[in-house]
Image (cartoon, rainbow, N blue to C red; front, side, top):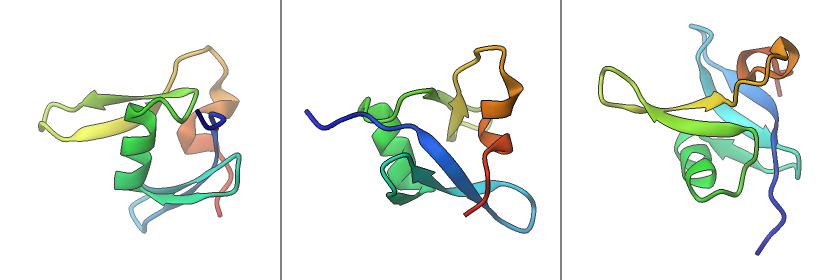
Length: 76
C-alpha cells in the first residue's frame, strides 16, 4: 500500500470554491481525483459527504484547529 498523504494546498475558482488540491507528496489533483483519493483512504485528514443537493463534497476532519481547515490551506 502506498503512503497516505494529506492535502497541503488548494486552488480556488473566482467564487472562492476549492477546485483542486496539492498533496503532501506534491501531486496535483482535480476535485474528482481528490474525491476518489479520499474515498480510497489514500488521503488523511479529510472525508467525503453528500450535500443536500445530492453531490459529493470533500471536507477536512474536525479537529478543533481552524488553521488546517481546507479553506485555510495555502494556494498553489
